[in-house]
Length: 508
Image 1: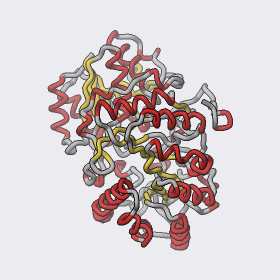
Image 2: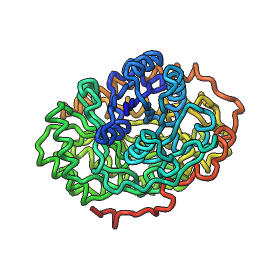
Image 3: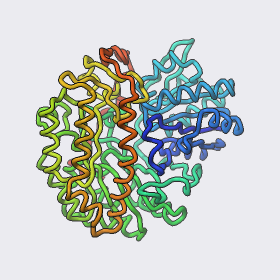
């Protein structure tokens, strides 16, 4: 079969600001196994431009696919764009099969199959093996009900099959790197870049995050094979920056150390960036020199909040002393820290925002990423927020960078002022400016200047976007807006397969 993968343009205004683009890892992960099965596969990356819908449809027509597969890292915010483009593709090619995968369709399959009749089937959960089986069934006319991990229509009604087994051997499926032109993708200020995953899932229970529900259990790739793949990307394609999509790649110290040592042995000049937990950094204080030697330049640390009641509410399982210690350890080893800070867990007051700002200043991170809490259906936080009021009903704005929930004690404009004021104070304090201008490591100095420059360009667009956005004064509750999940829609993808946690967080 001729299979077309489409990465749709991101709906956010801010996506038009940075000059850098990263490849769509999810679609490439599906593409590799499909190529190996003998399908003719092509990728259209609509992020470049970004491409308008007619251009995407015209390029799709020139390929004449049997099936078109959609996915988007933006999930909820990307869905309205996918819906528009998929509808246009079907109008142009009525016989094309439309396959949709990702986090949003995994948990909203019933709504999609009910409202969007042109969607043939939905891949729920991990897609590599499920997509292979689905395409084989569509090609040979087999029964879709026999395929685990999908949703489809049976006699006109939306239905879902049993969850697919978790992929235990992540190295069994390769990434379809040949689908992209590496010269087009960059990060870190124009350096050739890719997105990778060492691991999937997370053993922690933070209720605003859907990692545990979607991936079901933490697993990792073979450390040595993974290091060799990164080295090969560098040597064969000139890749310089490796952006880890993992939520928490450092869960197993044993596996992580094996990867670091294997990558050091490859002797390649790479820049590694990604996310982890502060307590893992503190745990690994004795091997942080290996992090640096392997090429780690920056970690995003999910601090989220410092209020004790809020941390208990979101089940973060972290303490502020550990967060502060992690940032200091990273600075001592020449690794940048980017702290994430989430606004809106509780209905904050001015005093709460002021206390949070002071706490952030005491942490003294190198960079800050401010986000708004967003109650997606696949997170446990959705249940806690069901009675809160929605002020932003445009689903394209459900991307963590726009206010979507009302705050009882503060109007949206004042929440925005605190949000932007916190960003400004953290990035403009003297110590931060000195690091940007005079950091002794030229590479890190370049990175901080690039991030600062990008922030200056995004800032006015976010403020203007706030002024242009329409918000509801007395909007629906979260439950009214999304509707209560029906049977099978809110369940973890791990139903019938219990969590297997690493033994003492050190299993290989």
